[in-house]
Image 1: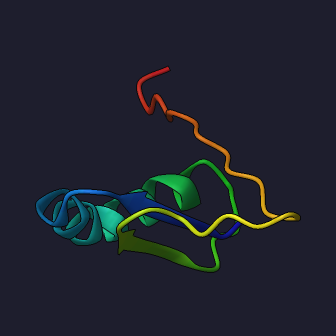
Image 2: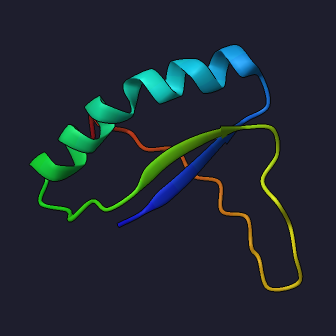
Length: 61
C-alpha cells in the first residue's frame, strides 16, 4: 500500500511526519506491504480524476 496524508496545520503535518515510521511498523505487523507513506502540509490537489478519500484507522480494533 501507499498513502499520502495531508494536514492543514503545519504543526500537525510535522507530528504526523514524525510518526510515519510507527505507522509503517504497525501496518507491516498486520501483514500489509507498505511502499510509500508521506505527509504534506496544506490541502490535497483535486482534479477531475482525483478522488479524496478520508478514513480513520483504529489500530485498537
